[in-house]
Image (cartoon, one colour):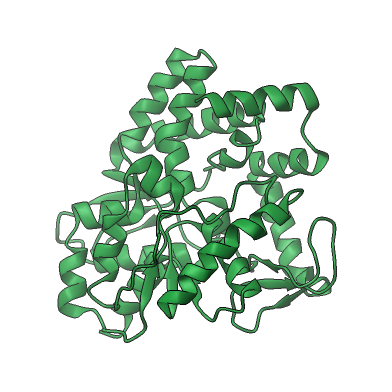
Length: 349
């Protein structure tokens, strides 16, 4: 892909900003990242305040590249990976059970932990055995889209070698994030091809065979849709669905999340669900945030027109961007990952 090669060339020629290098260092080192995020949770109230609609955290005052009042992702006391044992047996052992591994993604691991909690609840309802690989690293997407070749190579090789150690024992690896699943399933192979590493390209291709975006696999390979129709609690709160770029444009996934939401929620389509939310990556969310703000405005207007209670997308980058866009536009609609809404409909059956 030409654009990723151009980004790498720009990074090589002009360098990568210090704060991005620091961020990618944390992504490469899980234990240090765990410590930093724990400290962030403990001292967050010094600079951040909880949003009254529980959409995230607001900056109390202007910070470097963060203006006062900006909505930022929540911070969890304990990460998803540190909240569960590695093995979660299926509730009914007498049956022959499928076994899936979970790759959680950084935002769902540290910020939006309800996504992983909901996926675990859904898999338990389906009587599926869960394996949570604790040594997984970031998929490498933030570094990849910034041109940091060394960080991408380090994280992808570590992850591939780790996945190979258990993937034969699993039916699938589920990823509840569009960007992460596209990176692992598609971009890892592209990266190694561009770097002329055929052995690693082949290994990435082999791993990708069992990688699935969570709602796509749940809809295509389980009876979840029927269970939701038969047992799920009906809600009168309408949902409008936004198609993340890395889901629909890269992976062709857009029907499955709607299939799983429709049995229990009124669905209202926005005028252009396929239009990008404008998240744009690390640079757009820091140095060039004014561009992200402008890109989010038409999407917020579309969502407002639907009068939906929830906007949903299987992407935490979209969640960050759309929550801020809705906040700026004073739109009451709340963002929820489809897995959170699906799990909620199964709770009070």
